[in-house]
Image 1 (cartoon, one colour):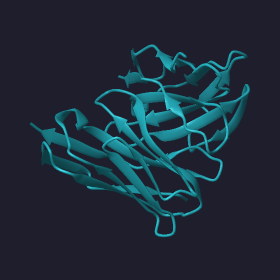
Image 2: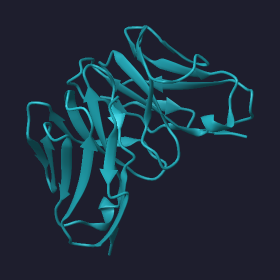
Image 3: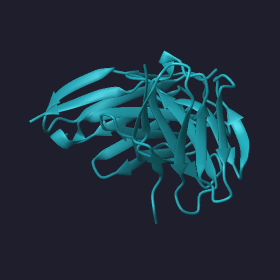
Length: 111
Length: 113
């Protein structure tokens, strides 16, 4: 059974810092991995989708990497801003099934 | 192109009642998935519908059921509500295929008293 964990559970940083969020999954047989952002009480916004054949994806200040063999992904956020404050969720897609989500990392960026 | 919409936004029910949640998929998408997100946790997969047929189900009891209509909109029905059913219910649509991303709606917040 696929399980996804995320470290740290919560993170508080001053504005301008670069930071890394970690995601681990137990079964390397995945179609893809996706990072989402969720604001309090809201739905999910897709940030980056990495297919199983890819190593990384970049969008603006965000960079996500995937190491399937070790069951790990990282989300790098450069020059963090208060508007980046949210919960970041990592989700993997095992085979053709739907996403298996981690519990999320709650990020606070202080002005 | 319209995004995924869900209704209602909030709902309060009492234990034992039944509830129906609705989702309109993004234009051009034929696949709808439903997730339950308890407070402080990641979403849990309930089931998926593809072209009006159930196409996969998570670890949820039969009192969670669904429908997909010819226009690919969908309903989630929950019978005999329990206190633990209180959660944010998220709907996601996609054009099918395991390599396609899913686009999520804003969710319906259900509170069971």
